[in-house]
Image (cartoon, rainbow, N blue to C red; front, top):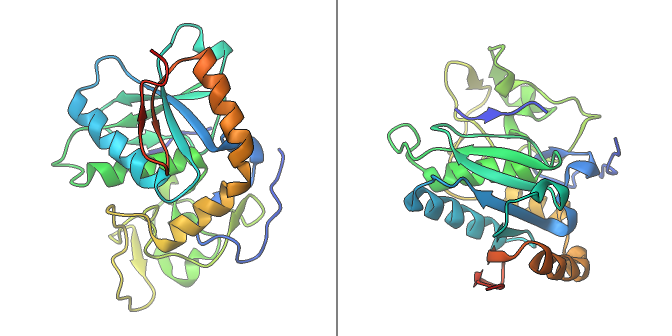
Length: 242
């Protein structure tokens, strides 16, 4: 189980536009699809490598760029960014919240066998994705019998969404709290890859039209913060500023 940390301008909802459940608050989206981040100082390199691979997996299929930055002093006055912390659990806010926001990860493979997939799940939350089983139409597919807030259903006027995606990386597995109303032949709750629906939704939420402004924003980040590593669909770039 993961956690969503508790936390407008509404994006126009287009029926069938997304195959996931996403924020409709454009203020929660990352500017120009650029996500600056830093790792907590005491994080082990092995865990960093898992998180970096999760970033690559998302960036390879989208315009989203995760930017590992150098400076941390007075960073809150410059940019909004994610601080990735080894907390022994996985937790994230949904979307950008402003200034520094934590994203918790864990190196416990006994509890979370797919660490890269769980990191992808959390990064997708940070990009603006809710759990797929919070879909407004989920009751057509699932029976949910718990008061756990991680299973709360989103109201249709607070999110943008499309067809239900049982294969989404944002879906929880079935269990005592959640059962299927119909026979299914797909693994629900997988943490291996982004589904086709995940990819489609990601590219609708962060479209390629942002690319020109994105390059200008990256130039500014290089000057202001110092970029250690950039993960993008053009491959990793290291040491952009010495």
